[in-house]
Each structure stands twice: as C-alpha cells, then as structure tokens.
Length: 419
Ligand code: HEM
Image 1 (cartoon, rainbow, N blue to C red):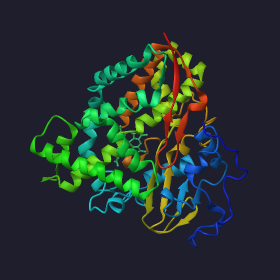
Image 2 (image 1 turned 120 degrees about the vertical axis):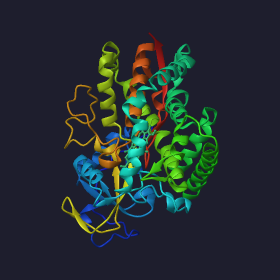
Image 3 (image 1 turned 45 degrees about the vertical axis):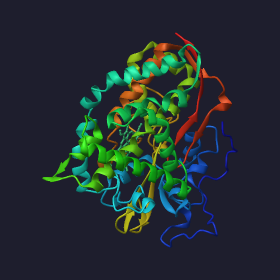
C-alpha cells in the first residue's frame, strides 16, 4: 500500500515561481499541487483527497488537467453539482481532448457536445441502456459472474482485479457492443495507455489503436449488421438524415472509453472496503435486501473520474471571477467525501438517507451506463457474499491503487473462506 506523510498545508497560497497564474485568479485560491499526486499521500486516497474540504470550495490548481495548464478545480459537492448542471457557463466541447490528441475532426458523442446536439444524441442511445434494456442482460451478468467466481472459489484466494473486476464488466460491455471477448486484455491495454498516463506519446499510441480497431469494426458492421450496439449505431438516423461517419466513430470511441473500466474501478474500491469492514460484510450477508442500498452508498463514496469543462463566457461562479476559456476540473472522487454535504462522509452506511453523489455526474451528461453499472455491482456483491463466509485481505501491503484523471485499484489480493 502506498504511504506518505500527512502534509501540513492542503491549500497553498504560495505561488510557484515557474507557473503563470492568470491575473484574474486570486492568490488565495492558488493550489500549487496536482490532484493525482495529492491523493496518493495517505493510505486511503479518498481520505487524502478529503483534506481539500478544509479549504475553499474551489481552487486554482497549477497543474490542471494532465499537467497541461493551470485550471480551476472544484472541491465542494455543491459547487461541483452546480458546475455539472450549468451547461450554459460550463461547456463540454473538447472536454475529453479527443480532437487535440488524435488530430481528428470528430469528437466523442455525446460527452463532448453541448445542447442541442447532446440531447439529440442522448435520445438515440438512452433506450439502449434503459433499466428495461439492462433487465435483459441480468441473466448474462449472473452467469458470467458465477463462472468467474468458480475459477478461484476452491483455491480460497484470488487477485480480485485481474481475476474478476476487470473481466466481468468488460465481458458484459463487449457483449453489448458486439466486440470479441478474447481480445479483452488487448482492449484494456489500449484503454490504459490512453487514460492512465499523462505521457502524451503513450496516450496517442493507445488512442490510435482504439480508433483504428473501431474503424475496421464499424466498416464490417455497416456491411453486415448484427444484433449489437455498434450495428445499431451505424443505422441511426437524426432528424431524417442518416448518421455520419464522424458521429458513428464518436459514439463508439466514447462508449469504449466510458464503459470498459469504470465499473471495475468502483468494484475494486468497494471490495477493498468490504474486505476490511467485517461488520458491514456480515450485515450484508445476513440481510441481502440491503445490498442495493449498499451499492448506492459504495457509489456515493467512490467517485472514480475527473471530468473537465471549459468556461463559455466571462462569469462569476460562487463568488469567483472566471474568464471564457478557463479550464475547470470536476473531480468526482472528492464530491462524495465532502463533510459540508454528507455527515461522516467516510462512513459507508447503507442506511444513510441521502446517498446521491456525483459519481455518475449530474445534469444532461449524467452517465448513460449507470443502470448497467448499478446492476452489475449488485449482482457481484450478492454472489460474493453468498459464496464466501468471510472475505479479507490476504496481503494488506499488496494492495495497489492509482489516482489521477481516472482512479482505480490495480491489485487486491483476497483471502476467501467458502460459505
Ligand atoms: C461505475 C461505473 C461508471 C462511472 C463511475 C461512470 C461515470 C460517468 C460520469 C461521471 C459521466 C459524466 C460525464 C460528464 O458529465 O462529462 C459519465 C458519462 C457517460 N458514461 Fe459513464 N460511468 C460508468 C459506467 C458507464 C458504462 C458502463 C458506460 C457504457 C456502457 C458508460 C458510458 C458513458 C457515456 C456514453 C457517457 C456520456 C453521456 C453524455 O455525455 O451524455 N458509463 N459516466
């Protein structure tokens, strides 16, 4: 497990001499740090990040998004919810940096679009991920989950991330998309190259591999459509015209990056918590009806992505002057741990009345895959708690996690006692 000393100051008012701070940024809000580094300082990245809640509700991070340039970073739950839902002042255009990275004309659909286009794109895709569409996948999720558990159950131990968490959501996602399961390792490698590092050459190489692969697959499905999401996307129509090539690749690329490892990340953090919180584990085992509530609570407490917006017009946001073009980071891992909004925020309490966090965002871009994600998590906890009378860490020092633009657990060695 990563360890570091507690730092004395969370929000620094000392300006780093090597970075340029725009003149409209007050010195008192300058935070000479970077979210990925700061959250790796203690044993628990969420507790480490929550130190920021002792300071202002938004700061100017000198390192910004992937260290590219300084950016506003929203810290408090209320301010983050306001920024997520205010698409007039905060634009999503270019938010994932696809055009800049790949040098292409297209953007990710719908995540890099504002209204009205975003609404049109969501209208097409929402039914494909609705609760009733997800219901049709439950049997597949249950079967896949049971088979993965079978593979390590008798051994009494597993490395939960590689043997389970990265496989289950990926298999389901690939099935929905109509992509081959046997390439899962390769897809995950490409995704990690694209999302997990700030090294632009590595990211570019990963992004190109994803793009090239999807382009080939799209061409195939246009020729020979199947009963899968990529085929459905290639046949979409908007306002009486057929979908364009740029829209198709934009949808597929966005789903690939959004759907492949986000569920795995939440699953990793919550299973880690469950393995060290025996009373909660026992309570859920004895009361499986509580698992749905526990999943909502795990989600509240474990945001895993940092989203980005661009300020559209010169404006004032929660008393702070912002300029058109300023970048704004929305680190969802901080939102669920804000003591100004949640009492005792680090406590995982299925009975908590208000469990609605910002892990899936908020407003028009709220995650399209959230019903699928929730359902998968519920099935996983139900089966794991049914099959094992005790789940614990087999090697607490072997737990590895990462923070940054996406958060996740990379290694979680578990000891499992059969029920
Ligand atoms: C626990 C798992 C997940 C988490 C934490 C998560 C998180 C998020 C967040 C925070 C957003 C809002 C982005 C923004 O406001 O800019 C989002 C949007 C999105 N997510 Fe997820 N996601 C998860 C699972 C999935 C899955 C399984 C899929 C697809 C199968 C998916 C596809 C998308 C797409 C396409 C969008 C863009 C929606 C739009 O722009 O209207 N996500 N997700």
